[in-house]
Image: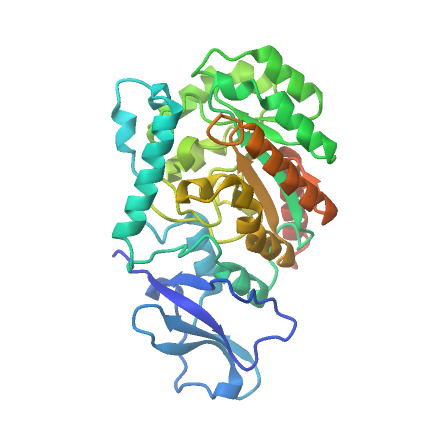
Length: 407
């Protein structure tokens, strides 16, 4: 039977840990269903015994989520393991469906960029208008609900809280975008950073010399789909495998270990097949308000391990997305400042994503803004990581953690 998920706002109780991080001024909202709630107190705990409350966003009803019992032991109505699994798998929402634009008889990237930008921006605004008053997770771009629970229920991250770390990634979606790679990489290198460049090997005629040049300077090459036609995530498993095998020379030549799905499309079968070819995936966002198939996100701002063993590195700072909402380039850093502070304070992973195309990062103005972002992050002492190397470390940590458990 299909579960109904309802949004709840988290609120501090009298016994919320004094040292526990609570981002003042930001949202703290989670989705809950009967499937992740399993213990209800016989009587409402006394206010002085409550650690954390949950308030139904629609009805406003307030109830205890975590409390201390008469013996001073912590109890909760939340099955945290089931909740965490539902978030990581995004099973609380409908699985993504193949977008309408994938039915076009040509690749939609043949539509001029300015027109595609206008269509995407309009679609986001229309969706927000019709969903006003009908909020779904993630509720906003600044939602710390899952991370508050993560800190309260114990650190089970494979990295053991050894963050915060910084991961820079770029989705190169055209030959024109590839022209700007060296300039953008130069900006990053000014601050001692390297990044991952996610390439689409079968859509345009790719200048492999440019890709090789960036790889030779210590940057990483990833895969941003094979065609970027919004169909790949929805292929049958065998067809998906066949497509990946067809680009085996590209994967070998550039030591590609990671994948990001075009347009953030993701399906269960996609993740299953990816685990057979790659070490990590970065197709998820922690807070997803822009996917073609609807809102979602894994909620957590750190590396995760999927059931298949694939390492998931969720994007936590889709740098250019606010442009669709009318935010000016020069205001982007101020816009993202609360999120950057949040990720740092929860010792999470700031995974930045951009596109070097002209309507996005590939303008002089946007590159100046990007440089200012990197300058800030450099001064704050973020630990830079390449996604492939980070994924290997996460896997090692997970294996150590597992083997060290008492038998």
